[in-house]
Structures are given as structure tokens and as C-alpha cells.
Image 1: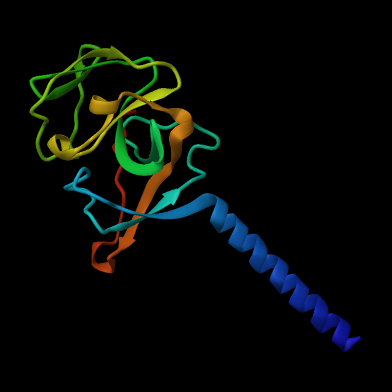
Image 2 (image 1 turned 90 degrees about the horizontal axis):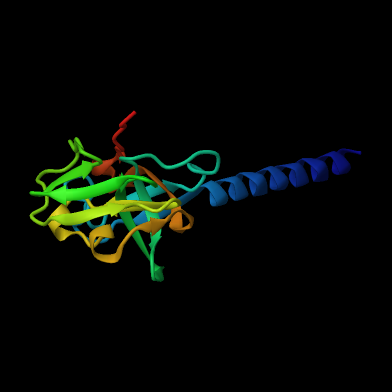
Length: 174
């Protein structure tokens, strides 16, 4: 009887450990920042936790920092900020981003871009993404909008190096 109880406890513990492992595996992912495109908020070599479950029951928002597969190069994974939403009319004039006729407030960037971008209507199911370090970012300005299905998840926590530990700040526009 005692042996049977011990075996049940071991099996129960293994099942619980497997469930925890699978839960973490399907909801979180670790990624390393590569390049200067997200400075001054994220730097090369930092590691971030990506919440893959962030958009299972809701849509991304303007200002979210996301990790996604680059359109046309699905093996390449990038991190950028959502600037334009499906259906938006976006334009960059004199280095400033406009959504419709309104200037987009962007407190997360150090300086605006030096380039302009002609007016574009973002297709439904697509997003316009840009790095925070605008003049050093390959983003939607060079390769177009990014489809929703390319999103892996929302960057949530910068955990490495430990001295740089912080929540990855999105910017709420609502």
C-alpha cells in the first residue's frame, strides 16, 4: 500500500512538472536583442522574455513592443514597436509620424527620423512597425507592413544582464 502511494505521488509530481513545462513553453519565449534599432530602450545583447499568449484573446495596440518574423524572411526574427494599426493612414513629414492628420506622441524615442514617408493606408490585418532608434532601424519604412500572423508575441521583460532588469515599456494610446 505504501509503495503504491509513493508511485502515485511520483507520477503526480511528474505530470504536474510536465504541465508547468508545457505551460511555460507555449506562453513564454526568450529572445536576444540584436542591433541598435530599439535604443535607447533596448540594447544589443539584452535578453527579453516574450509573452506568446499576449494576443491570443485580443489584438496588439499602438505602442506595443513586439517580436515577429520579418515579412519575406520568416527565419529572421525582429523586435520593433507598433506605430500604425490596420486601417490607419500613416505619413512621416519632417521626421514626425502622423496618423491621419494628428501628430503621434512618441515619448519613447530619443530623436525623430531624418527621413519622410509618403502617406500609406495600412491594410486590414497588417501593422506598421518601427524601431525606436529611427535612423538605425530597418522596419516597415523599407519592407512594408507586417501581417498579424507574423507576430510571435509581446516583449514583456528584459531580464539580462541582471543590472538592466526592467519591464519592456509599451506606450498606451488609449
